[in-house]
Length: 312
Image (cartoon, rainbow, N blue to C red):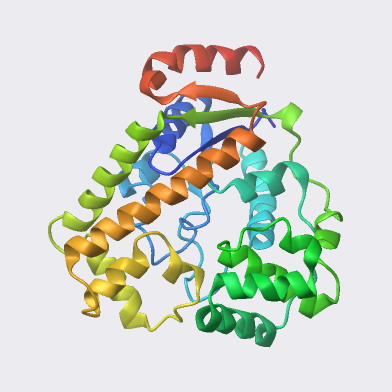
């Protein structure tokens, strides 16, 4: 198999357009590495590739999971393993694109072998998070697993919940399981890794503009109708799809809890905060990747193409 291409970057950074150009140049299949774009019911707010793009170039692992389940990184790796075999069999090049850093980390470093956690335990700690709030949950984690508590911020709700689930469900710290990784599917020395980089203020402008467009699109093909459909399906509010960017805020508007302008502003704010965390993670964990200045990405394409052609 020719060297896979990996494209990372913050939300709204233009990763998908680069992936399309690379797929057309290198006979590629685009593979999703975004944890929200896997859900079938979340197309608009997750900024999933358009139907025309997906018809033009083969895409895999987009919208292939029902939002009624909590899709995990481990499940993604299993799907990727099958997908890589499929792509190799048809003689094409895999091109991964997405902003979920944990997916790339697992792909290149393996995944910690945490045993399955009982649904009762998972539901309990999600309920406690809603009842008590993240800071109080962090205090509880400090008593149960001080090692993990020192690594997590008091406001990092999801990771605190995960750490509590694991310590209660297995009797061992998540730190213990993180040190028992499986074999990675790919090695960094055998891939082309690119990070799309924007100056923060420009990225924030793109985020705000894109979300307005998602909400204001004419007809029923917009973010509001998508969230209404999720509410009609009755999905549990603790499911990942119901916590995706923009969903809680637009759901709040549709339920009459706030005005539309307020909901849009809050969703934009949350998306900017998420992008800031992504940028921090990328700087810390992808130092060795090729950094691409997004403002000059089209101009840089010949250089990118040449680099890949030279190294297969």
